[in-house]
Length: 399
Image (cartoon, rainbow, N blue to C red; front, side, top):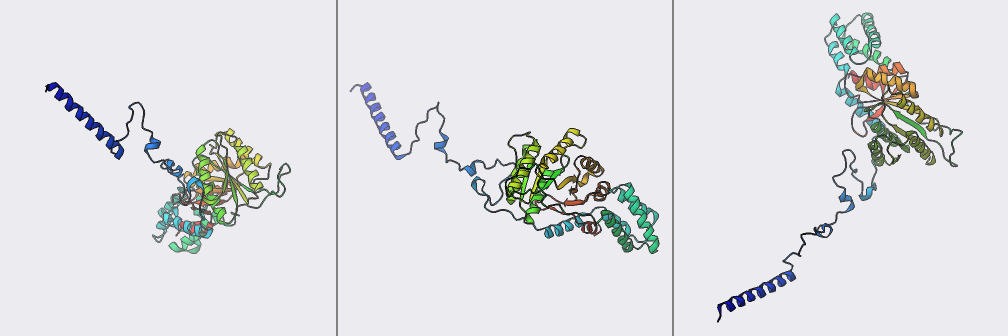
């Protein structure tokens, strides 16, 4: 037989056997389907389709992650119940007492026994560096020295009692620190539906970085803990993150937030819509968050006046709370003066009053403005905001 014919026959048999094996393999699923080098793999067919709630996993920014208890689609299964006011105050007093402040430095001097002139000077220096200001410090020191002579003693406990009385008098427990939450009468120009009643309005103001938006959200929790219905207005329209942050606070406790979807929208318009919404819903309180502004920018300060006037078209604004960072000291004092002149501040919220040697700002701001510190914040927790308690504050300093 011709050798060439033999080779051709063998090749033919091998080709036939390979074809039969390939067909058999395809039928048993052992060979993957052919993929064209010019056509990418269809991932919707090749991979499991992600559920909507999984598709966004890992994309939440810090502080905006869905709360535990939220279901897919953003529906809230259970709302948080904010901490009661007595519980807050007890916890915050303990935190303040444990954090220090100028009281510890003074008590360390008093514990030495008979006070020398250098001891008195050390007490004076400590008070001056606590942001009490020169005038208040001299007044307090004169009282301490006079009482020490009257008592005829330098006994630490006796002087401590005099110091407590002096500080308490300066903090002034007689000031009305309650929030004005009485429902106001509707303005004559208010065009409200039958049965609608304006809510008590609170306007939050302050410079950048003091924590206004966070404080607004925390104040909403305080009010919800008191079983009041609340609407919040995101009138900081210059930062989209501010509206998102306020909405997150609202969702956690079931508080509606009125906001504009357009960045840079007129903040007065947003504030008006929020006040109107609160009246339509017969809510108890409407909280308006505003953009932070430098106290030396006249245009921005005038804008606050406009917001207040526009809100007044529904009803007068009952509370204008200035949020101050307690660690800014005398600079915070200047901020307070300018804001008070611009919109008529009715109360102070001090944030970060957590043991820095700046507790004297409480005395200074009240004396200069004639308005009380009404709320204090001592931490980053959601319920770390409480009404200011003068006696608790002084006792914590001297604990």
